[in-house]
Length: 111
Image (cartoon, rainbow, N blue to C red; front, top):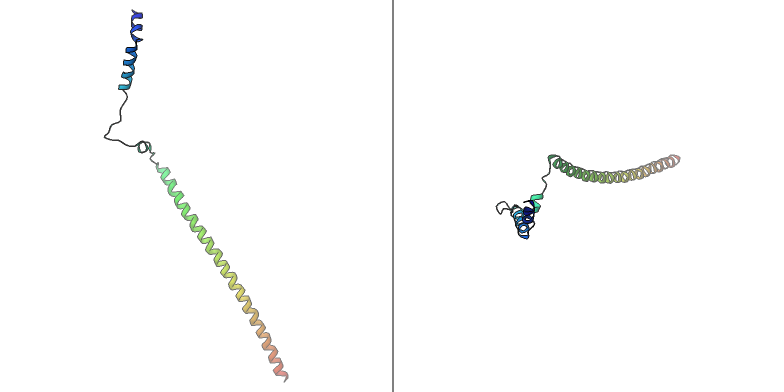
């Protein structure tokens, strides 16, 4: 009896039936809730990932502000250097005019 069952199982009709049976049992996608594969496989970010993204965004904003402040600082230093140079020039001309004034007073006193 065992050889009879083996012979039936190995027939081409059985193999065809078996393949059809396996394929008939595979689930077919329903048309009601059809999503694209991208939507279906899309990963929902975790709370930690959302916090990390927010941190990176705020960090980049702060880096931009720091760059702007450093540029302003450099411009202010240039303004300070220019003002100091102008001040030194004025002090020098003021001291020259004082010394000229003293010389003139000394000449007037001699006369």
